[in-house]
Length: 165
Image 1 (cartoon, helix red, strand yellow):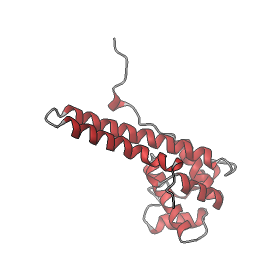
Image 2: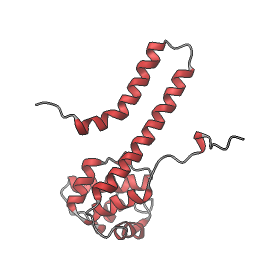
Image 3: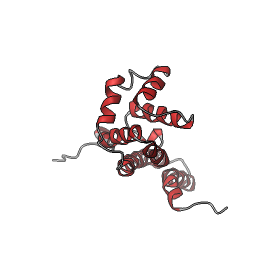
């Protein structure tokens, strides 16, 4: 008997605790926010509410405004997203979820890794679809598959390869 769970029924890779800890750290200290912004983008967060919170934090930082519970709450309220993000109580819980912002890099790397895995799954699913289209030229299929995988890998390569100026 095959006891494997079909791929479509599996929960995509994610770590909500790391997402919460990343956001909480970024709300505690400006340096943690800057470090989080270097590593992450809104799309790296699995939970849509976390994407909204991150986007609001980034907007505050880019306008050089203070970033704290009050300013974040007001930013989300202006966007009509405060309740979608869990309200003030959830934002307070994010801050309280971390005793210090010192581990932001560790938390953010976990979030980033899970995001990359989800992107690889999406690319793999698209590649399966391409491969099942037997009418398509094989060179076209392999080129498209390479582009999909390279698109995921490109972000990581940027960490190691910097353009020569």
